[in-house]
Image 1 (spheres, rainbow, N blue to C red):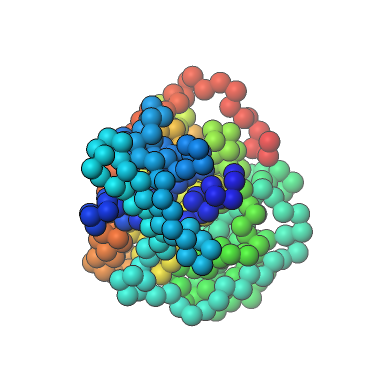
Image 2: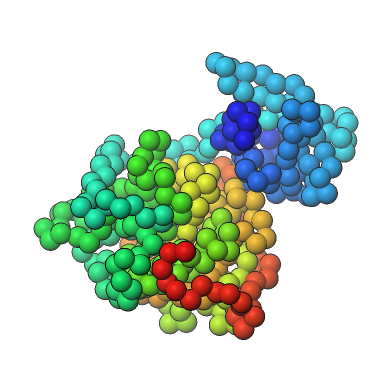
Length: 364
């Protein structure tokens, strides 16, 4: 990408009209030419016409050409352009900071994340599992059903128990974050210059999920093979299921959806960078999953629930936090992004028609 494209893609934008009417509080220009955060048929794609940013419909027709630019401190801060659908309308893009829970008064702890690598971290793998854990975490019970040499992921444990465990934990990285909740803690781990930003794909499971080493390998392999941006494993029928769309459908290898639950998302590095600001100062995480899919454009075929892998959610939800406060937090963060709830399925890959599925659990 050119320097101009990088600047446009790496920032968030407020989309409005010159008369002050707000169209979308957050708009993101995704690297493959899709628009995220605001999903509309007239502004589904973007590109450049004669070095000028253009919003385009799905047919590739330019609907707004931004031909006026304003800079501040050497950085692009505002773009304006006239709509080609209605020439009386002038569209405005203002560079903004991504909204976070800080905007309605929440804050994370002042603790910095100190990442301690272990002796196991010498040979970095391509994928990373980030697990918030305490002494009740089920990760110590995950069956080790593949050879260590075949594991395609490293493990970072973010310990939220008050006391640091005395026994040596089996992980590549350890950090003690007892004063933060899941997403505010993870936000701190991936700040600029973090050693974790080089991982290709990142899995963020809750610590009450039962899975296995081999299934995590398989999850990363399918995620990469199918070129997904955001995904999750399905939930076994005996699980505590909050959203019916996440329950395993045995007829499918995977289903393309516009929703992935915050319990166990897998992100590409690129999609995590796009969504990471939403993690900041979050207490419950409620509502973030709907924002993520919107920011990533809800593009059919890029977001999926993988039915070929199923995890068990072993504990009932809503037991470790104030549900009313969490719902209020969800309403507030949704208002900042004007996000809507969506649980659509766009199709998928039927299980008995899957060809060439990777049989090895190892890296490919």
